[in-house]
Length: 110
Image (cartoon, rainbow, N blue to C red; front, top):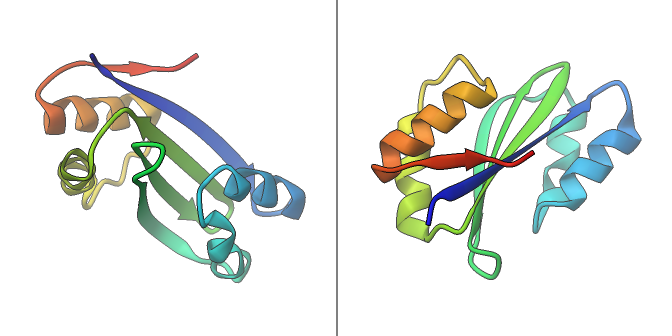
């Protein structure tokens, strides 16, 4: 089975879009204040119940979330390591990092 990758974005200029995106992440609303105060960087969360990792990136204008489903905590750690220092947060680069980390294929959800 290949990992599935979902992506979502929110403009920091629209608080409701930030809330909607963060609400999809278990414990995501805890990040709201950091995002609203101009946070720029990357963060990772793993949810055991859903077997999904959430890779968040923010450039001060847009919040992006790449969700990789069907993985375990060790897979999530390997993906986080592959993404470390990534400056190209496009869907294609995230798919490549996931495939590299897992040694297999990853499917971008449509």
